[in-house]
Image 1: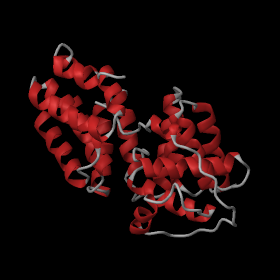
Image 2: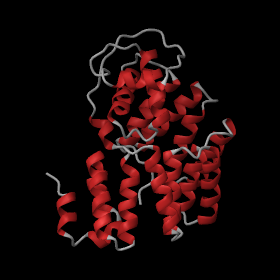
Image 3: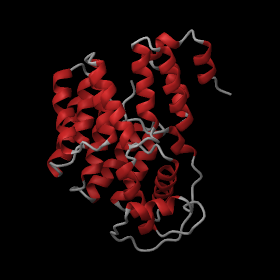
Image 4: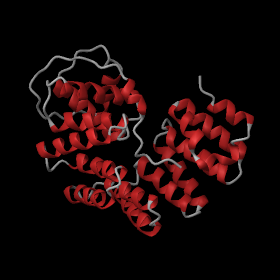
Length: 284
């Protein structure tokens, strides 16, 4: 099973877009406006404040930066920071996301700490910093960062969800379930929370409950590849090869990055010798 901490490497391949500079101001943008911007982001000239507003709206629904429009916006905002044309917490947050996608954890941490210095009460950078700290082996600091994000917004589910991932990876399954259930109580309509709760239930070998969690995630967003991939892993564990291959095919159709993930995930071991599996994961 894969966590949704993963930020797709496709982000680093997005063409950088240059936009006119104007004074950055806080601006709210609806999800509908963000979706409308998705289609013409690559050609329309947008100000930094518009880009930041679009990025925040997109990341609310796509925190892992899986979707190409989100990737494009994050890349554009990060580029403005690199060019010295934007100096804001949101800008450094975008730079941190892109650095994380490139595997540059030190650079990601530096950008996140800059974002926190500029806007210490913004919870998002504290939460992603927890992920980066954990990935650099600083588990205690990571927990502290997640708890800081919780303190800043007690009603926000994501730090509980990500702390649950940390505990699961450390084998602390009871602690992981406590945090996962808290995340679910705060936001039962979150795909990430449902998906990761399913991963936890698989770790506890509660397979029927895990399947229900993944299916709930799919109800919330039928176009998201992660639940399909995790259903493939679960079906493989249960020796349901036909179902596993179908779910895997769907995940890869939605996001080609899962082709490589399938090669590495131990939960798909039962499929390794299957000709259809080898065909699905074949790369050019």
